[in-house]
Length: 485
Ligand code: UDP
Image 1 (cartoon, helix red, strand yellow):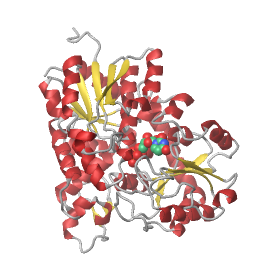
Image 2 (spheres, rainbow, N blue to C red; image 1 turned 135 degrees about the vertical axis):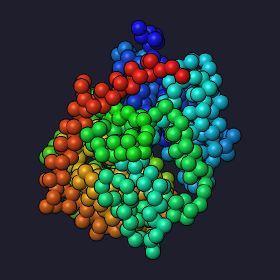
Image 3 (cartoon, protein in one colour; image 1 turned 90 degrees about the vertical axis):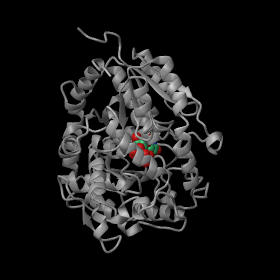
Image 4 (cartoon, rainbow, N blue to C red; image 1 turned 180 degrees about the vertical axis):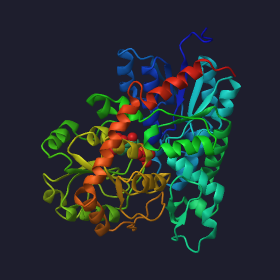
């Protein structure tokens, strides 16, 4: 007899950052499609970013809803309207943001008390969520939002500390104990690892790794066939309980879902799609560096020059073109650039519907910062990549793309760096031109494209009935139904 005949109710609690909220919303929708009642917990200013999508799902019969709590901006010394990591502009602000996160514990407890769900899926950045779920006698599942590969590399680095014996920060070392020979340098690692120092972020990450050990398990936005050796390594060598149920982005089936995902596009997406319709298959490059990273005006200029010299057609998304880069009129562009690129290239200032664009058959390459969502979205669309990692887990994901899956080329980014240095150019125009040309028209371009296409097929099969992700999701739901503390 089923011990819990009533509908399973799960709380989903994402970190307030697009790279965590977007996949968590997709994940909650996926559970709801599978008959689970899903409640997404967020804050007042973040809720409108996805409320339309949720409303549409509800009209189609999903039991899914949003509960908004107050974000403690003032208490943490942040501006009133700062509720999302994408509005953080300095290291100091980010420390306050992490402080604010710990103040969300009490409102979460209140909602748990009121709704008494059966399970809490909480972001890795809320390490205290394991203890909170324990108090209510329910399992806490961790959502990391990265690859198995990245988690295995971090574990190998922490366990063996191979960087202890190197002569310089740019000397390559092999990360021991992994299924493949993965080489890194000290420069690829976060500065708190490099400096051996502690700060709010490194403490939070330490706590989150600890909380992972006592939580019920981990949900991964990945699929078994993508990184089988690392999925096994994570479970068998590292001994963690994990379910891979991705790629989550595939739950966005129609144009409306894809164009509203994450935010409102800052331009007419239909015009962009018609432009893409007029292009040959695989002939346009898509360039985007995620939702929180920024470049200096000098670096943007190098990108523009590199793109122009490559002769390729492109769509280039420039986030905060009018703010961080100090210039509303786009003077970071070379003189007459947009005129010369008329018909050949588009610059999107602001937010682009990334999955909608990547899925278009005209897109033949993706210059990415290797955030895990973007990486997986590129792979799911079958598009080879130029990897340009900046910080967080991006250097690890980049290695997966180029060294393990062999569906990309490196642009040559050398150093982990979170904040922009106004004068700094980390990748020169010649390197950009070279990587882009190699990706779109080089000797190995076709092979990379074929491998990427095969991964696209595998991703789709994994999420269809009987596929690995589909089965893992059902197995998890069944297990949660019979959970007893
Ligand atoms: N994204 C988007 N349009 C943009 C910028 C980003 O749709 O203009 C989405 C992208 O599809 C992905 C997420 O934002 O789902 C970014 O997550 P990722 O892990 O790639 O990078 P992060 O922003 O966390 O660095």
